[in-house]
Image 1 (cartoon, rainbow over the protein chains, first blue to last red):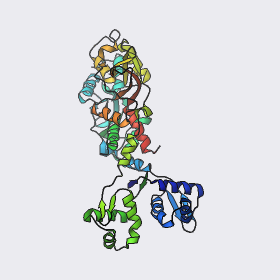
Image 2 (cartoon, one colour; image 1 turned 90 degrees about the horizontal axis):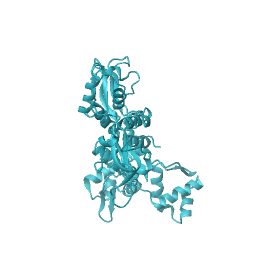
Image 3 (tube, rainbow over the protein chains, first blue to last red; image 1 turned 120 degrees about the vertical axis):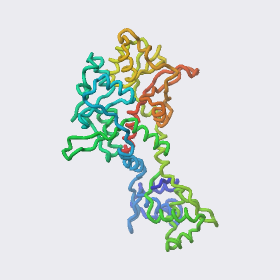
Image 4 (cartoon, rainbow over the protein chains, first blue to last red; image 1 turned 90 degrees about the vertical axis):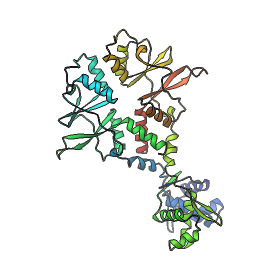
Length: 212
Length: 212
């Protein structure tokens, strides 16, 4: 891949083709008061880039400017497994109080909850505030009682693209996605192998923007 | 701007120039068993894109592949004012309890606090949990007592790039940035005109990835 800044003359050629297609190289040269051979490098660049199409004995056609696909391709090539963070996990039987303390110690906004190592729920800061305000006994009630429970948990797989993960975060209005791997072939039981948050996405954005 | 997929032959030419610079077009053609005129379009594409530099009577030099700058330029061109959300604001005198209720009603993770309309603090879900667990009287204590206070607040201006905002979010490990405008020229008093969160950044990432 490479990126080229189009010259003024190339932009003019595109405009001429757009308005007169199909048009021969000879006719384009006439409109610009240039010789056919002067235009040859410009025309070959414009056809190689897919902006123009050249059909023998017919002339040039305008196809389109493909520039923005480049960013899109670059973004789609980043996988969840390339950037996932370490998951923060507790068992269902943990008290809500201990879960809150753990959340502060680990400084995370969500904790994944497991039952014998299998993903069973997720708890967020918002869930915690709601519970505390509701007067629940934080020392006695286990976290499993107030968590969001499977199958209502949105997750991603290690080989999913980060774009897929970002779309799930936006669509479901959540802050965090467990990265899971199937334990057997039932497609029902998963163990948690990572964590994707909006922080991970923001970090990639910074890296792309700073060309790292 | 446009993007071109380099051909195999162009990649080979780059490798030859890298290893033998300066090298003439004639010598490159010999190494590839091709004629000079066959190579002419390739060489003009490679020089126009800035990958190679051609110096008369010396030969071709390798400059570098500029492709990734394109993403970086695109990202840097997005401004805070283009994508900011509506800020959620309360006055300092509001009780913590009312602030919590408001946070749930508006479904935001942070609220900006003002004193007579001037930004004075920020409160996050994490601050709320800490306060509630500490046994503070939520009905009597005003939000101004527990908020993070100016000048310890990280903010952005409407004309800052979104990349700058994303870097501040990552560097300071925060979820939200008030977008502010100065009230006078003192550079001390600001009113809040917007909000930038990791959600905004994630949304741009999705748009770039989907080529919207």
